[in-house]
Length: 296
Image (tube, rainbow, N blue to C red; front, side, top):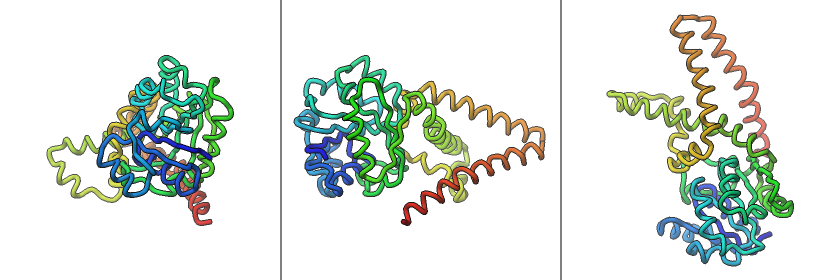
């Protein structure tokens, strides 16, 4: 499909995509750009990419450039690369925020808008880095493409086809719908997990609390081991939607706090039962459906 693919950022997502492109023959040559020498050596040793090059050399003659960096790094990178990007190249990303990225592109590097396909694979985990990358990460996972007025249909179709070929389910959304949705379903849960761990870690008996924590605590806070730089950038670039989600969650906390303070057994039972029913009917059914698909 692509002659030369350059992936800037060979971590969990970038590395996993590189593995898929090589495994499925979707790229004749996969080039990685890494921030550290240790990552570069690991990417070559594990055959994640064919070659690791410095940034400016890596984009020469690239047919596809994938930005798999923290959100706030993307536009500065493109500004520095603007004159080196081949005219025929397609650019895409794997970032979790779209409205701010699009606005920054439009303001600072508008020349790339006709070739930039805004994409977001809904895949990942608490582990990061090239060592965490793997084949199959995107299987049956959603990839959201947020269409813009400027990007060509041909570029969007090629990126959508790439994701479909590696096993993902491609869905189209608007910029605003994307950011509002994932502020609630992804960004907010990560902030909550980080906050809960910080709350316990600042208690005088923190070690005892961690030693005695049960499996539910570890399950709930697993995502607090995610890359801190990446999540800082997500909160900054999707600030308004994250704030809105936090305000909504705060209302829920205040509601259950009042019920507990008033020893309102009926209200507490109804609150918990409503949440259990919503999860059982929604998320558990989805999980079962995905499990069946994966077993086919």
